[in-house]
Amino acid sequence: MTQPPLAAKAPAKRNEATRARNEHIILAAAEPIFARHGYRGASVQAIAEAAGLPKSNVLYYMGSKKALYVRLLARMMQRWNALLDDISVEDNPADVITAFIRRKMQLSLRHPEGSRLFAAEILGGAPFLQEYLRGELRDWVESRARIFEQWAERGLMDPVNPVWLIFLIWSSTQHYADFEAQVLGITGKATLSDDDIEEITAFLTRIVLKGCGVREKTI
Amino acid sequence: MTQPPLAAKAPAKRNEATRARNEHIILAAAEPIFARHGYRGASVQAIAEAAGLPKSNVLYYMGSKKALYVRLLARMMQRWNALLDDISVEDNPADVITAFIRRKMQLSLRHPEGSRLFAAEILGGAPFLQEYLRGELRDWVESRARIFEQWAERGLMDPVNPVWLIFLIWSSTQHYADFEAQVLGITGKATLSDDDIEEITAFLTRIVLKGCGVREKTI
DNA sequence: TCACATGTTGACCAAATGGTCAGGAAGATA
DNA sequence: TATCTTCCTGACCATTTGGTCAACATGTGA
Image (cartoon, rainbow over all chains, first blue to last red; front, side, top):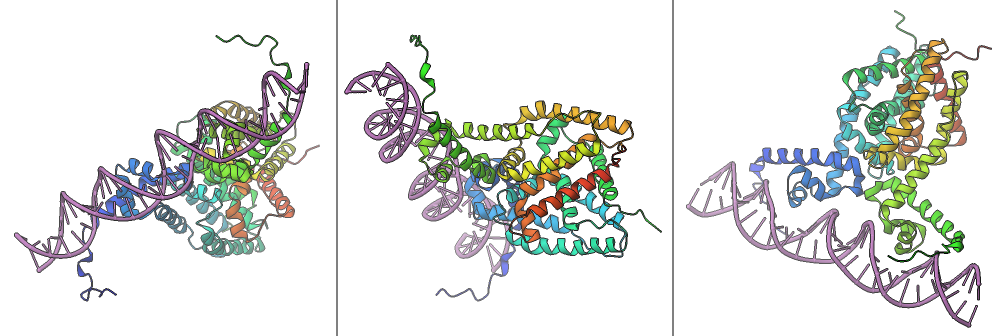
């Protein structure tokens, strides 16, 4: 039984900058490696080299390989949650769906490594994300689904299964990050230009809106 | 310089059955492991255990980990190619697209492990499939794309970018195999029933046909 | 029966794996 | 200056990695 320090640790705020900087470097180096090789396939040594730090230093800041991986996943889930904003039955379906597709597309392309990290995790059976999928995310999907159904009841769109619709939007947008290698190989491009992105976004929006029979603004 | 056997090896056909049987066992055991963990993350030891064979025996039949992996990829590409059947401008767009979606969906769900294997390979930057993507598959896409364009010219469907359309069909069908963990987690199901599959297929077909303004049979 | 190819496997190897730890460097507070 | 905390890292460890090999088993054809 060691006596806890009475005065606590007042000078807790110390060299925070160093820690923040190094953690950022490590996370940035680790994300593409986990994305590319999966959890098992990634090695701490490779991450350390990419970060330009000794392996011991990576372990010092992150504790363990697993902790590092979980942290990356959590960061990506945060980004995900940020775009799960609230919508209401009163909103215009066309606007909401358009914005949803656009945001999802931007998320995928702004964080392709994170997107692939997430994909690799799901591909592997989502060992670390079961809880999130069956909890938070599921609730979100259900609530959106109910709104889609209400829109259908009001005749604002066709009565399609809203869950399949959400999956359609997810998969078709995610594809351009996760399957980037395939997309570039087939199109023969080195990268997708901003114009390409814009075109794809417009294409997907158009297909979904028209395909679901979403009425254009009636006002 | 060793003299090559003159009589060649007439009795080459030997215990073929044993080889065929064991190779099949090994391939079946390896596919889900590579799919789940990627190339690097999979271990020969784990594959051997899943196959119920000693590691040495796996190496004996497959030569090396890489050779085993490439063989699995090749097998999956063969399945892929099998559904890339020929279509012509004279065909009915609605029929072709409907059949395409259905077949792609069946492929994904009949071989989910193979589908995930493929996905993991692409996620990792397609190190072993570059050639296939930039060659065979690219040609296939281009030729289909030209037909879609001709259909559009004839007023049989909207003039959408056919490549994006093909990607849309690929991604939205593939999703149910690759992201199975997510789909099941969110829907709360243990597996997707045949009815679910049928419903999803109908949903996707409907959205795509309607979204692209494909005319129903005019005859 | 013999001969020869194929099948089978435990022992073994160098390299890489994730992780620990002792000990020193550096910066802040007093 | 002395003291404390955080930072940093090379040496080290047990385990696992893909792969080799020699020895033996099995089956087939003559």
